[in-house]
Length: 378
Image (tube, rainbow, N blue to C red; front, side, top):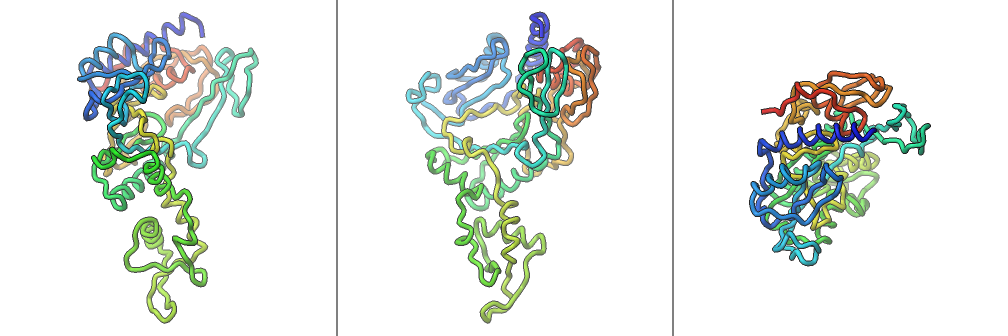
């Protein structure tokens, strides 16, 4: 990509990002003055940390006039001096409890190709070097069905947090790219240590679970009681919903509900939730602002209701932009972009829906040509 093209791309991204934030769209976290603020800067690709703003207008002034954020974060932790440049000097006061569920972990959901920008070639298999010597770009596509799978795990996680831990203040956010973030904001989570958070992560994901102790068997049967709790409750409910339970007489006791032990492994695979444990354990983790832009995809970090009908959503719904954009392709070949199949030729210009065109630009496989039809959604 030439210097002129880089400037054109940067100018385009700066304009749409600042146009969006000029609407003052960000969700303000509680105790803003106690949060560390961080961002990745468009202008120099630097990661800037240890910022602090006592109120939102100062933050808006910064991102509109000083550094344009590709990504904008605040700390899950509360600090006495959040602006201190060393963690030990910030004086930790507590942290929210975070969970991260990514959609690319499911089988068939991490579809990759490798792109050579100078030649425009696409390779379906990994290559170390392009024909003209440059390092190829790795490009991943994520079918919407994978996002739906992640949402189903979000629902399971929230049920566990409410039913088994008793938490009530739970927020769910689409990450703006490849999954969901779940934040527990009950006051009693603030003092949880790293080890306590590790234990919660292990429990949710069933890591280290001693199956033979949790589910002792008798003649290849797992026997359930009238009231079950925790992981046994989850397995019992799922087995009941799937019609896998039978009523049998065991040791003279009639009508006990039992499960064939051979079915237990598959059921555990359904009720144990894959999370990024490092996120949950980290008491100084940074979290994306609600309604901020995730410029890995050009989509918005959006608050989600637990009652949301995920079938009514798609990638376009998470775009804060509308209209069309003309872009010049830097590649030749077929790709999937946010669920849309595209056949591109290097050097050709295409008029695309805004969310698709922006996605191609941020992925460095197209250049903006004309954005006169592009608008921020009201």
